[in-house]
View 1 (tube, rainbow, N blue to C red):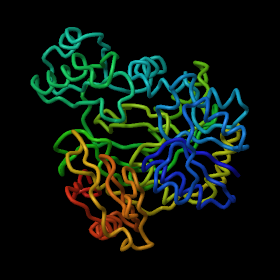
View 2 (view 1 turned 90 degrees about the vertical axis):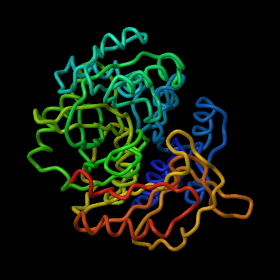
View 3 (view 1 turned 180 degrees about the vertical axis):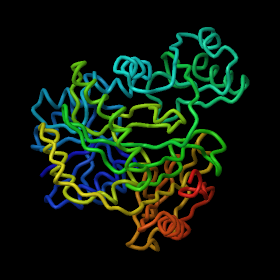
Length: 417
């Protein structure tokens, strides 16, 4: 089976590794890919989505998998173009991917289908935003469009809110777009993933992401400093409630609204005193949750995604480990405000086979050494039968990998438990 994955980061490295481990014999490609991904897949060099579609047609690609979200809504949309060309695509159409591309669209969808979420107000300018906040803190401010996981701020006071408003509405750090002023929900966060095929779905292993840069959930928001994943993360009773109140109504809502969906969907949830409420949707696997989840997904992911892209949800092709998986991120100096490239990475060859290393922001230099090339540099993932042993195993392997200016949290898998 010829599979092309779209994207270049740690999530795509994890997906391609999982396809490589599948029972189905695969020939793997990636666009645009990375030096690390090129070790297990051929990286495709073309200019733009239309050229990529032409390349896939010429090379008889059996399945296109959307890793990175931006391509789903770029131009005509990756899945829309694949459909025109007759290429099965594991990823939703452009109109359906608005669930991630527009926070306001997502909120309206949730309200329309009675899916529990926080109250929110859409704002066109800074004055409207200030009026919507109305002196109530803490408040959550969200840029309406795609911002690579960085367009959200939890503001405890007026000063932090004003700083974010200036950044988004005046300086336009993320480009043109509206802003959502949202109720601040309190409670532990849980990420739930599902594979959706039209009106059917399969829930994957739940995960918990750690967005803040520093221990104890302090510091600025990041794309994610680590994650844990396990079927034991939430009780069966709570997972049943999440399915009944959030997952199923979402899938039913997509069908009712005529929004075609075949691919992964991420439910970012807050477990409040009133029950689970949805914070946001992502129309693909989360990052770094994907790196935590993939090692405990067994079976044939390649065959599963191909069947799903063709409209057949074959749950029997997958199995899920009952243990725990812990993903730890090494970030570069300056992250998340900036990043530093060119720092040589040492110790990768010392990581045991029991753990996995997924590259997010690395490259090979002229001497053939791995060096930093982005904010989140890499993730080290290890597992165990219980949370404590998985945490211990992951940190033991992470300690072997180092570079100048590196940043990591020391409480992944222990904080919020």
